[in-house]
Amino acid sequence: MLSAESSKSLFDSSECLYKNLKQKNIHAFEFVYDKYSTALFSLIVSIMEDPFTANVILERVFKNSWKKIGEFDEKKSSLFTWMLAITREETLVEKKQQELKKLLKPGISDGFKNLGGFRELINELLEPCRSILLLSYFENQSDISIATILKEDLSTVKVCKNKGLGIINKLITIQGKIKKPSLISERVLAF
Image (cartoon, rainbow, N blue to C red; front, side):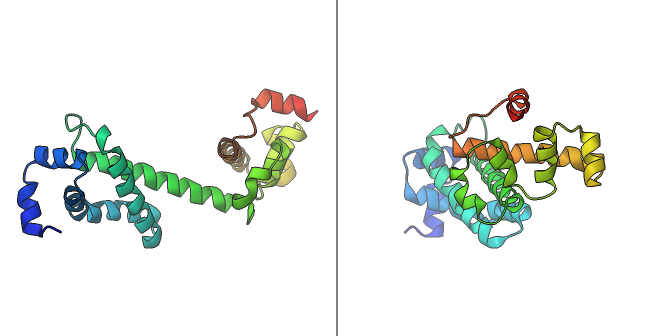
């Protein structure tokens, strides 16, 4: 392993560093890790608020950067900016996955590949999203009617409806077995 002094002098110019990275030089990669990992980790922790998860994401960021280094274009951005974009994307994906798990019944995130149709997907949501979507799509109730029936604010009904459909869309996309139905066909098929 190179000392900090010799690696610093070896990669003193950005061009030299980029060239070595694209040639998959492990010393260049270690240099980049030493230089940027603290800043990237800080960004991840500020979004995730969990150091353990932040470490996992940081590892993913550096693996992806290593794999995708050929896509890096020094004419478009600096290496740090490019890695910052990868970090932000990885972190937001992880945050969305964690939020999705919070809205599902316990255990469903591991077993949703066996789910059948739209109604079954709705049944896996937590309240009040489950009731709101069932009333909307299987009882043909308006948002105002749903708010009255469930004694919820109209804004809560609309937010739960949108959030629930977003979760179902993600489950369908991840599952890959159910084709995404249009909202009109969902209502027609329900009757």
